[in-house]
Length: 236
Image (cartoon, rainbow, N blue to C red; front, side):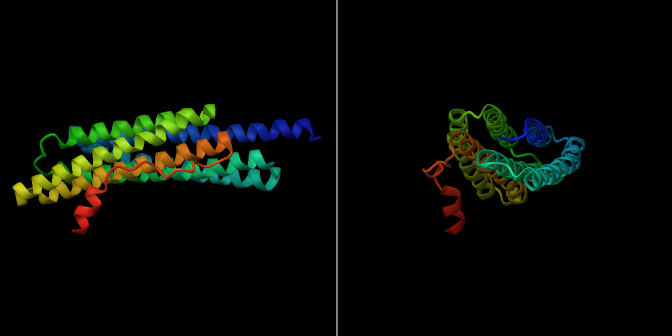
C-alpha cells in the first residue's frame, strides 16, 4: 500500500494545479468578453488591458507546466492520475491559445476604432464571443465535476459558433462588394471573427479532454462542424 502521507501530499499537489487551471480559465473568460466589449464600445483603453492581461495567462500556463512536470517526476502517478496530469497540461495549452486569440482581437480594435463602424458587426461579434465564453465556462465546470454529458453538450455547441462565423463571413463579403472602402475594416473584422471561431475549437478540445478524463476514452465520432462556405469561398 502507498504511504497515506504521500497520497495526501500528491492530492494536495494535484489540487493546486487544478486551482491554477481554474484561475487561468477565469482570466480567459474575462479576456474573451472584454475583447469583444472593447470592439463594440470602441474602447481602446479596455483593449489595451486585454493585451496586457495576456501576460498573466501565459505565466499561469508556464506555472501549470512546471508543477505538472514536477509532479510527474517526483510522484510517478498511477494510470488514472497520470491521465489527469496530462489532461491538465493539454487544457492549459488550449486556454493559453484562447488568451492569444483574445489579445489578437484587442490589437485589431486599436485599428478599427480609427475607421467608420460596420453596422451591426460589432454586436454580432460580441454575441459570438459570448457563446464561446459560455462554452468555456461550462467546459471548466464539466472538468471540475468530471461531467462527460456536460462536456459533450459543449462539444456539440461548437456547431453554433461555426454557423455564426459563416454568417458573419457572408455579411463582410457583402459589405466589401457594396463599397470597396469597406474592405480594410471588413478584413480586420473577419480576422476577429475567425479568432473567436478558433477559440471555439480550443474550448471543444478542452471538452474532449474532460470526456477522456471522465470515461477513459476520447470521443470516437468526428467533431460536428458547420458548412465550409467561408473556406470554399476563399478558394474559389
